Length: 462
Image (tube, rainbow, N blue to C red; front, side, top):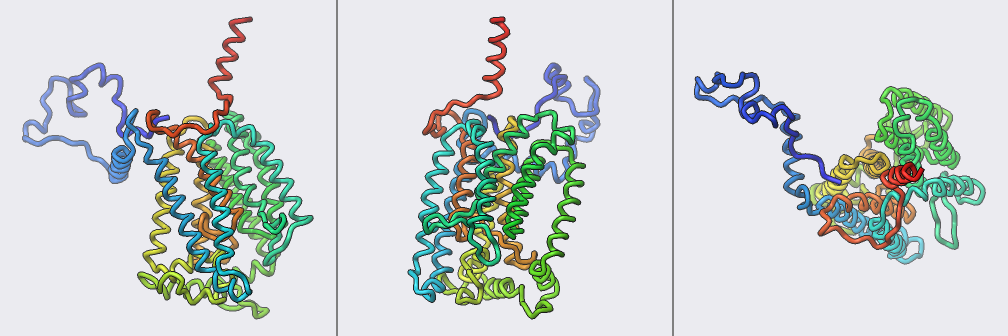
């Protein structure tokens, strides 16, 4: 696979006629251009978007190289930014959770150690996934989404409820969140199914079946557990898969109206959600005296008190029970308080680098399965990060969505690292063969070329 071309291809007519290629546009062959009479050189006007695109391509060409000299900078940017975000997450979980752990009579390092264990498992899984052929994962699409649906249904039977959300299963003292695993399972399944549909996706019937019903089942089971935030992220995953598959845009308008109507209905029928929305909009308490904006208000206090360089690592005052469970969804506020604006900007830059590098992987894919899978993972991680930081900064009402790689939560961290492993496998294929990391598992996968070759051999024998 090759990177995005850095310059437009020369037209065939110009390649055949070098004189026409050298002469300025709009002049006849053999005729003296007007610019020669005045002594000036005529240059075509280039718009600002064109200049930005050209500069963007030159930058990546210089950074990554072209052809057989590609140095794999995309691969290492994804890997480096992911490891940096994970390291920042473990450090901030230790800082944000230590006070409440001591107050509860627990070890101040307990939550950080658990996060570190899941990070180690996730990094190993990421390494394995980055060394295998992604096409082989198609075999896991149906079993994976089937297992996700079964686990989501099992949550409603034997799951535990925390803060009003029933999303966790307790496995011998270790809590697991099936809704996080369903994100990667649904992304893989939709990429597999939509790639099989191919050109049939221009017809709405093939778009709707079976992609939309399966996504609706997963979203419905998550909503039964009262987790609207995770359901919104899964909606984004489904929409991203359809978009990168090339589904007609008018269908997104219809789906958007339906999703908006459904979200409004769920908000109106839940007093807790309406309380959150009204408190966020008006800044006042609800009719029953509940201040649903309490967590967000103290998060803003933390960001404001951090200033440029913060109050110092471990010196946060808002984590002293002013922000409930500060190491979870509102850990970005603790980063802003302890590390200041500089710390929050570093996190934003790391997510920007991660997004730009994954985008480079997406645009280089020619196979629909690869493009849909990588694009869906990109929207999932960046979209979830955007929602989380928007909530902390008061741009959205409070929604329970963790910050990828940073917020406390083993299931979320493990699945995010697995998703990065899939993207790294695709980025690895873009590297020059001489410097490409070797595969750890040589798993054979059936590709479109293999299928076509087998059909051609069968026809010859017939």
